[in-house]
Image (tube, rainbow, N blue to C red):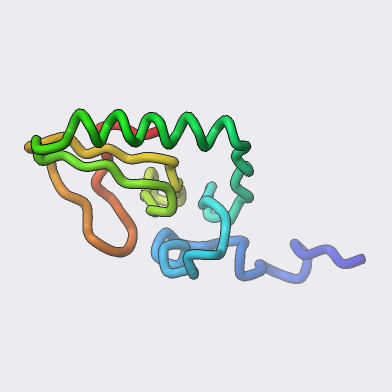
Length: 111
């Protein structure tokens, strides 16, 4: 058995936001204090609720200029913290996040 802390940092021990954002889409995890942490695995009921909320927000925003993003987008929430919300909502008249890469502009609503 080895002690990783004695051997030095592993590639997942001290990530920057930029390194985390550049990881492949199929690499799971959120950034917590520079460390890649496992995401919770949602169940079917969770996914039903997220889908319903996404549809409700999209229906309400239709034709108004706002939009709803799904899971997978990587948001910087602090200097060494990044999250991947289930939904992100940007209301009409607000800022727009980048099309690709790390999102630093907070959404108006996060689920």
